[in-house]
Picture 1 (cartoon, rainbow, N blue to C red):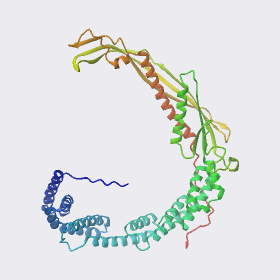
Picture 2 (picture 1 turned 45 degrees about the vertical axis):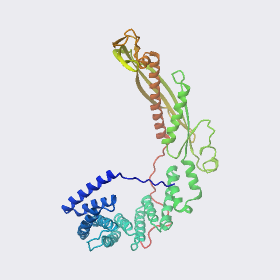
Picture 3 (picture 1 turned 180 degrees about the horizontal axis):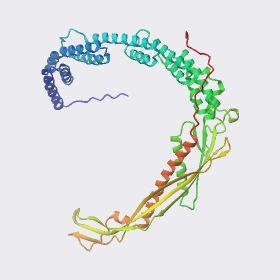
Picture 4 (picture 1 turned 120 degrees about the vertical axis):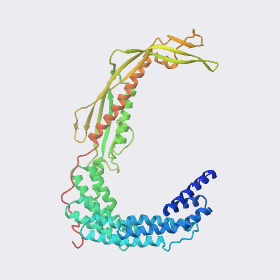
Length: 492
């Protein structure tokens, strides 16, 4: 459903804007700045279409403004500064359109829109000549830039699109001769993206090259790289990819990670906290890991691509390369202790006394404030067992440290009352001070706060180490030679 919102400008505001724009337009006209004056008069007419002063003023300056812009555009065009000429003509056309829509008779003899078309024709011809020279000199990047600019200005000009596809293709064959296969494939893809050339020879050339590069990666165990290249090849021309190649690559590209978290319960690690740590590690692994990483929980009933059957329904036994399966075990311990004896200081807590909704006095409670610093550490190890190779890594240590302060007060009832209130009234300093008097509660809050902070940092560090270790594959270089059904450009 489309909702049309009408916004009305209050007369008092619009009247003020009109007066300001009229004054500005007159001053600009007196200075001979006709283009800016025309813009000011046009703004007034947008607010008040029947404003006679603005219409008359626009009639005086519009012709001069257009002539001024056309003259400047011609100078730029004669210097082959077509971009600058184009900018000036855009302004001239806008002024002309505003004047005509307001019913203003123009004094300029030249039509700005026609001047724009003539300038663009010359600009396009110049760009085309430069593109041909660049193509002849094998300056492919320059040729592409010129032709793309032409396409933006005149999509139907001459043979700009066939020429653009030809340049991309020639560039690809040149890089093919230099055995820059991946780069060459990219040029062929660009050629296939030119309107009217999708699915043609360039697309098939790119598909064949990516398929062979993918096969090369798969043979060397770089399954993820193979998946990306083979999928791209299928999108370009699916019949070029070998039937089992992509299935094999997708199967062996997966890393199936099972995470188990355990803790020494004698060291202040509650069962619920251990479960929370495990859940947070899994969440980070899923959110920050690649699409090739599948994280499962031991004993989870949920199905995933890492079950006994692969993602396409084929059993592992029927797939030449099965997913990499890794079991990750995280052992975690935590300890929070008091670092040193408390330090103390005197402090005052002030509170107002109220009677009948009015302040009748102020209470000053003098207390002894104690600060206790707690330090803690969460340590652990990460062990990774690769079921494909049967190898188990050495335990990777993790250690997170931190500290926090517990603050509590003693004897908060000692107070002095100032003002007209009954001085015999017992003063406890308010609920905030009463809370601080709960020594055991403050110590418990401090310990809990520190444990939460340690756990959060521990989770982030564990997830980072696991991802850096298992969610990557060794990089390989592109092949130095490929067997292709095409070896050179036609006529080369």
